[in-house]
Amino acid sequence: MSRINHMAEAPLPFFDAGDETPVIASPKGAAPTPSYLKDHRARLRERFMAGGASPMPDYELLELVLFRAIPRQDVKPLARRLIETFGDFGRVLTANPSKLKEVKGVGDAVVIELKVVEAAAGRLARAKVIQRHVISSWDAVLDYCHTVMAHRETEQFRVLFLDRKNVVIADEEQAKGTVDHVPVYPREVVKRALELNASALILVHNHPSGDPTPSEADIAITRQIEDAATVLGLTLHDHLIIGKSTELSFRAEGLI
Image 1 (cartoon, rainbow, N blue to C red):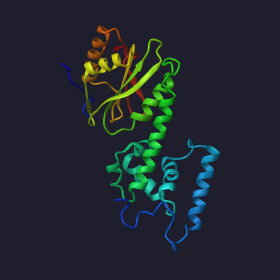
Image 2: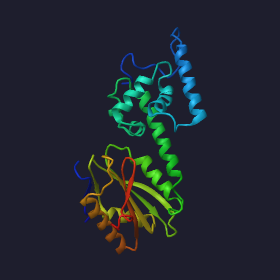
Image 3: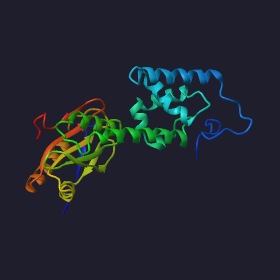
Image 4: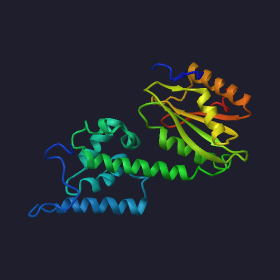
């Protein structure tokens, strides 16, 4: 019978009327986009192409994403509202659609654009990990985990499955939880490893608070999964806890 545990942190219709401009062609006779908006957008795009995203503040990068969703309005106020509401660019992209729509000016068109960018970022990062040797691509593994997990509002538990050569053969989300815990079934984790003919595992979960310090429950469930894996000849390489800007490795901390 499976044992369920909770990994936990220590306590600590479209746009509103008048807010959305259709993405499709404007109605006959609609006012053209003001020249100052065209100039601003052109300058922002030129800066992006010339210098990349690094020197741009989050709200400007967000403006570039919003241009497609709202083609004929000034999106800077909306970009600033989104950053103020969720904290940073990453948290805007990963925010729950229902939470996004609580921000004035956000409707389906904006949500879709944000979620497309989120999906693209995750897929690009994942491509650098799957079918790659985990030791030689460790930085890519960390980048991927941060991309898909660091800004989530709730806990998520993932497993990277490796073959005998330590090549990542699968990456799967095993469970979702709340803001401070996620249910984990040790038996299901090792069962899935056997189904994939994996030889080793890397456990990954996030702490929405941003602090990757493991709780007692995190440590306990890791030991249970390691014990179950060892009995079946599987190796638990590591358990990573992803915080907002850093991560904690159980192996590096001597917890495995």
